Length: 502
Ligand code: IFM
Image 1 (tube, rainbow, N blue to C red):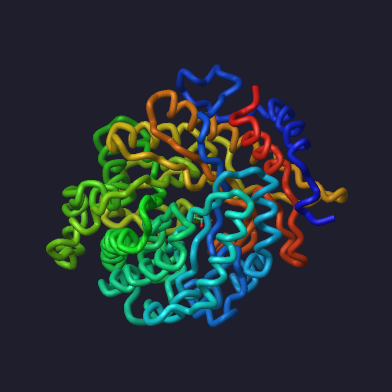
Image 2: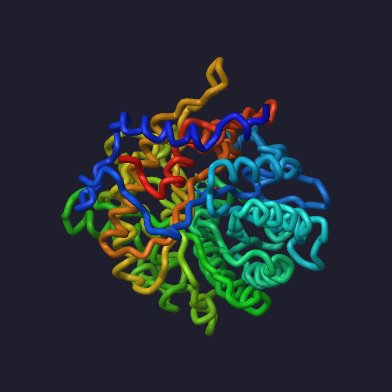
């Protein structure tokens, strides 16, 4: 029996009824709180998401070049247990099995990313046909299964050679990205209608170039600001390149991991701390992409570091190329308070230890605090209220921009029991609470068109290696056996009924 055979939608409906027993749901303070059978509108897009480096493996197959994550993960000390994405979930060789799993879950949409080094091994020059063929096979299998492909062009796997030349702090990387976007759009645009330029450029810029916990592992605050600008520019140039080759109609979007920032108190100092985090965490992307401007307060906050002269005339107008929808990735809120000036705040990951901060211009004025409440295996607080807050903020600030939740989910210490089942009630509770928050935000006017669980399957969780499991599907990395978790069955029930159970 294959793993995909191991469950059926009939089971999912049964399982869906049992989730009323989970009562650890986060309070969402809205009118919908008392509605026990929340239905989503017809046509709501139900999906699951993955990213190339996290699942594909096959790191040097068919001419793929090295990415910054290959280099970073192979260097000792960067990734827990020395894990790499060399094999990952071996998705590269298991597309039929994985698409069958998606079909059994009943998703309408699948969000995946294209690995730039499979298409242009050094980040420039002619496309590798074998790389394009892999994604064409994947897309064809999805379409055959009745699943809409949603393609992300960049989920952090920059070709290593472009990093050698300077990486995202270098302007030319944005130009190279536009070229790559045009190549992939031309090759797949006849069958992919939903495109996302970047996944979470905040992580690429600030975890990659400021705190250094992600590839390429640099700890240069100004380089991180330059990277953020060039990612915005690349988004704009890439959007234009896509629109030039895609048949009409096609949707082009961007996915941001916006921070639901909460000040600890209403004091002026705490409010200012929240403003600083909002500037470098959120508005550094929202303002250029949606308003063609830099946040003035961010420029002020970072004046001691840079005069931003790397922003050239026309860049902000280019970054503001209109998008068809905005993707939101949400996991937990960000609680902040003021820190006494000139005293570095403690690291939220290693309390008491000062370390390079991703919050360029906000440190040393801000302390990030551990938010109260239950936590996932990432030690992230479970708080669906933050998702509601973000969605209603965007309703007010970006009227007319449809929203998709392109990632939401949780890691827990899942394991297959002797009968081969994976029971993950905490994940079911997490998903239920967050879907209720989405529903509440929609009831209050947020234009949310769909929701994607992160992730379809357990995978390489960046600096945590394989130690954190986010999947609806459990992967035994020794055998590559896939087992649908209880949460996968539950989610299938949600999709089948178009909403949360009573
Ligand atoms: O695994 C990541 C994903 O690659 C980007 N968003 C957050 C997820 C969980 O950390």
